[in-house]
Image 1: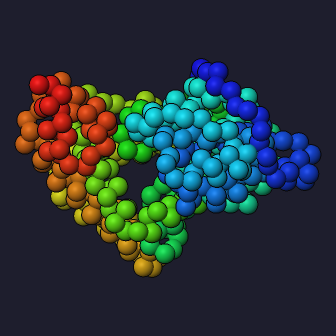
Image 2 (image 1 turned 180 degrees about the horizontal axis):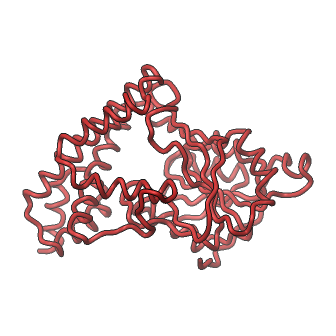
Image 3 (image 1 turned 90 degrees about the vertical axis):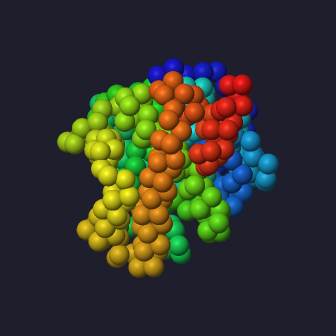
Length: 336
C-alpha cells in the first residue's frame, strides 16, 4: 500500500516502558482518530504512552483535544472526515509511518496493559505471512462492560502498514482487509466513549447511523455497492460478517430486528451482562435496527433511480444528517 510524505515534528514524549523492560522499541506506530474527544483522549494516550510514536488524525476538533494530544507528545495531522473507512484509508496512505505495524484505534479506545505487554513481547516475532491481528474487543455501555452478545468480540486493530486497506463497503463502521494471514489474540482493548454517558448524545448519533445503514443496504440490494474484501461463511471474522450482512438484506423488514435482538440477548448470552447488557442489546440491537427499517421505507417512498440513489448517498455523507427528507431536500437544492 502507498505511503505519503506528511512529516511529524519528531517531538514525541513517551513513557520508556518498552525500552526499559524489553530492551528495544516494538515495531509499531499507533494511529488515533479524533474529533472533539477531550473527555476520552487522555485515557487513550496514557494507555499507549509506552509506544515509540503516536499519530493523531484530527477532523476539526474545537475543544481541548489538540492541546491534550500535543501535551502527550503525539504528532497531530488534520484531515476532513467523511466516514470512518475513508478516514482510515487516507491515514494508511498518507501518514509517514516507518514501522511495519500500525495499531489503529479511535480516541475512545484504551489499550489494556495485557494487550500492550503482548505487543511488546510478541510483535517482533510474528511470522511475515501474518498481516493482521484480531484483538478482543470489550465495550463499555450503560454503566458496565459488554462481554456477551456476539457483537464484535474480536476486531482487527493491528495491521501491517504495507499490506492493508480499509473496506470501503462500510458507510458507518469500518473493517480492514489485509493481504496475508490473520491471527487472534485474546488480550483486550476497551471502547468507552464518555460522551455517550449522555444518552441524548448517543441516540442522536444512532439516528444518523441508521440512515447511513439504510442507504448502504439499498445500494447493496441494487448491486451498486460492494465489499472491498471477500464475503464467505467460512472465512475470517470480517469475511463471515460480510457474508451474514448480505444474508440480512433478504430478511423481512421489522421482523429481522426482533430476530437479531433475540439472538444477541438470549442465544448469545447478552443477558449475562445484566442491566448494561439489556440496555445495549435493546437499544443497539433492536431499536437501532427498527430505525434502519423505518428509514428504508422512507427511502423507497422517494422512488430514486440508481443514479439519484448514489447521489443521495454522497449528499448524506456531506450533510451528516439522519433525516431522510432533509437529505432529499438538500439533494434537490443542489440539483436545481
